Length: 194
Image (cartoon, rainbow, N blue to C red; front, side, top):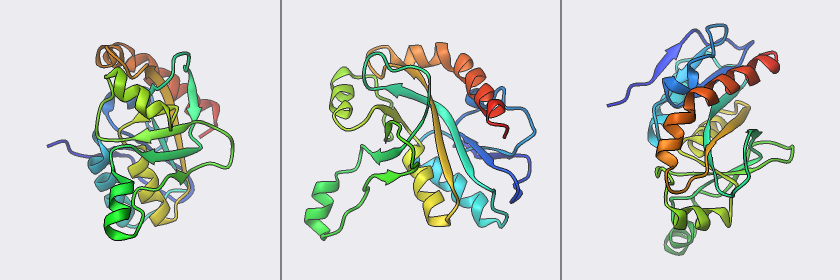
């Protein structure tokens, strides 16, 4: 079982950096608290809810991570405007219960990409094309973190650096690019003055 790790101490005067795995946190240093959640929605939910339930709240949560591009040509670092859950059957659940589960969550007032989150590493071109109808990027934790942050009433930013094109060979591309992505995400943190 993957264990969450909180590096540093959460205080109300500074942000909490949240990443899925150590590889993405490799260059963040120790000036801010860093939460390593583990991969996937359940790990992300459990880790963030656990640390927020312990008491101290950060000034904001900044999720840094890699994401797959759902369209060719997408590259760079992006602040996500909206996040949706791609592996929940919202129409069927609405038909069964009369309620909506997994509705999109707005996470920024500024224009930006839509992120699709699910517990599936997208490396199949058909899945990529289907997701591209509704989103620009794909990850495995963003929606879960947005849900926890929203319920805890803590501001959240989702910052994603494109690591691959979410198609054939994406797993190999991620392994090859994650170190460079981690460097770029750490540079983004420093450029923000966090």
